[in-house]
Length: 615
Image (tube, rainbow, N blue to C red; front, side):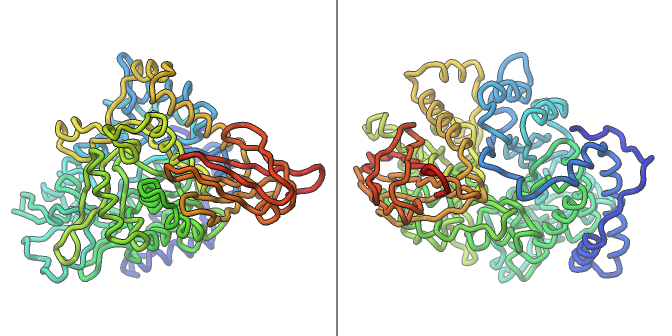
């Protein structure tokens, strides 16, 4: 269902529910001068009314009937991709993506996360020049609509910063009073003393302040990530209102999920860490209130490469902030488990991996366009373990990006390497089959945990490091951002002798089996078991109790045997079992299930009702 291109104001104006109005007024009061609250709220209300005037009767009815507990199901799988990761001659990249996705992912992928598809100046889309346009080199809004007709879509809300080439920043440089407070600028580099500078949490080693020449002379401007990514100043309420307008525009353009990029650093306050501030959470809550008012089906997804304890704060109380958070602890803990052949740290962490409500969930990804973040594992892995993981990544042809600490030292922030290369060294001499099994086992593990799985497109074919791109483009992250020719990709996928084809085939097989099982519903209970240090074991139970699936993953290169008590795991003796991954019945004795796992083998043992009743 598409929104009207032009608003229809002939009907009755939208009325914000009294409870939501009160909450939004409280948010504004906590962020800005109390004297501005009424004026700011009235403008928010106007934006909501304009948005609702674009909605058809069908859309309004669908929003009223929406049940947030049914937002995600076991059939939800998110594919993460750039708009131009797959290219072909004669068609726009977005059109090529739509055609390829329809053929290859139909029925397997519910949602496409198209990484920033707006005009940009650097960082492959994350230095946005214009938030409300589609990069003409990728396609048009009609191409986005074509994708929206086939899949749910996740848009990026890159609201922390904007390109230095953007109209907003150029007007700031030109002294336009409407844009003077869109950014944080100082007259001198020394405006922030060293003591305050050391307090600021930095995800980079680049300078925090960069000098720009303006119509009024030089200004030192706040740039958390790079000189070309200028931080927006949310202390300016006019900027907040503009971002709200863009947020609602994304909804009208087809966004079902909105990823809040780098949300950690949205609000800066000298004398603090400038990370995870209360104002940041208040803005996320305000966004949630606005969407709850007019677009409750749209989910907020927060992206924060920070320690797990900080990351999960963006769930709020389970009903007032993000419906989903990027599970940043998962990638480094899974990688550590497979590098060491020891799943104990992963098991301990996963045992407490519980979202705060039945309408929230984890976004379970392993790798992304950035690489493999490390911060989520801090506090769970020791510094020695983290450094060993980094050293292994470098031995496998990858790189390590660092951040600046408060004492001036640097520490690892993310691994720039593909997931396949992180697990498998090209010159190791290992059998290709062993490397294939290791890779698939790691991906299967991320599919069985409570939450929604996210898959970065290059991993579907086991993409290896593109070191040449790193040196050509001067960016470590380019190692995992290579464009793929569609014709070449289809040729590879159709060749059963190619490792990429075999990876894709096994990926597809796992996805088909996963989305068919209600026990993998994102809200379905999970219980993590400690059976053997080399085995990650999790029990998933369907919400209606109709089935239980014991998922066993051998993270080591050794043969491992494990056993479980049938009554403890399946709730009864002599359950009827079926092994899902290999698609065959499984024989167990009356009281115990014994499983022998080959190196990197995966078993999903499903217990089904025996005659009458539930397990």
